[in-house]
Image (cartoon, rainbow, N blue to C red):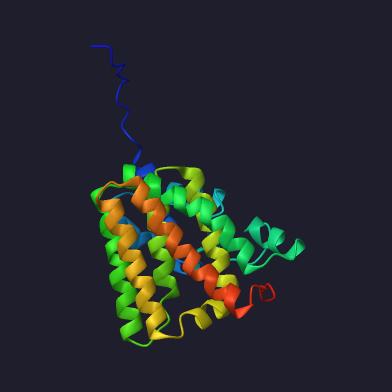
Length: 243
């Protein structure tokens, strides 16, 4: 047998706590500004010690994913400065447009969908399905559904098992959904468009479930091109002012 095996190293409890919270942030289930449950509740929910929880939170702080506010608790870091999200600085300094952003997403997310088709776990697929269902529910309730849309795309990024893909997508989606949310509301303002987006999401998910990288790539390309065509036809590729 030519396979090389490595000794199994047990994970520290604090690392497991860190990974669970990080996944919630990367998947978009915890969004910028959301408060993470207090230490005591995390201890009870996860069945771990206070020390493990604190080590995990300190690691999240060091990575720039959360902020700890004295007397208030721990919060997912909000988009606010170029230090937090370098894409903001690039977009502003180069007078970039939504079209420019979508062209970059075309390469990043199409490849991401293809990778997800190869690597997604059953849990990843379940999270994608949950995000589509949440988007359908949001639309029925008269809400826009942009947060749920972001969760779908972040679930795909997470399924690539590529940490760089996940971090880059987080930068993009923090910016897209918290920097230009008003423009997206214009896109989602018609039922026919929202239904088309949901159908496109389901086509992407179907290709990932079938483990078809080529179909997943093509389905994501059609999805992003659909959005790009909308902004090109409206001639509103200009981004609103950064907040």
